[in-house]
Length: 198
Image: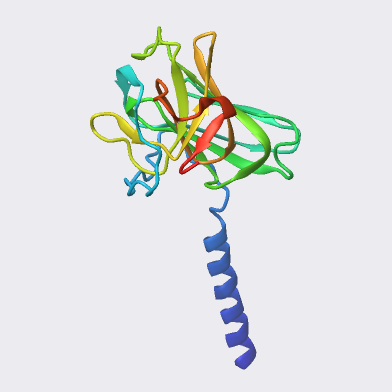
């Protein structure tokens, strides 16, 4: 009887652990609605930046995911392109890209906090946006929400290039990025990016 109880307990534990671990690394299904609960902007952000707005807002998020290893790879979703070069990752990692719906151009990259061994390139198509003819654009990393009037509090600012209708900049970690307008005076664009308080 004790043996049966132990076997039943072991089976229950195995099923519980299997259920708890089965979702690790699974991609976000296209068309599903991930949780984008607004967060408080981190203290010490550089300044507010104006987000780029889509001419026609999109409904619902677009997403894609893939296992990318040390050889590198590229993900694309809804006009956003992430290019991870060879050597940026030390082991195969499931990378997820979620492009939220709504009026503003932005992306969420997972796993949150991932650090690259060398920078990856992030590009945003600007055709169909209010910045389609603008060349004075920058990239920002932020940890919070975009306000209703389109302002982002940046934690880092990145020098950007506009190449073939795409604003591009280099990133060293995940997770929330957006292209924005202009570069306010005194933010030190020359070094590639300016960390908050730097």
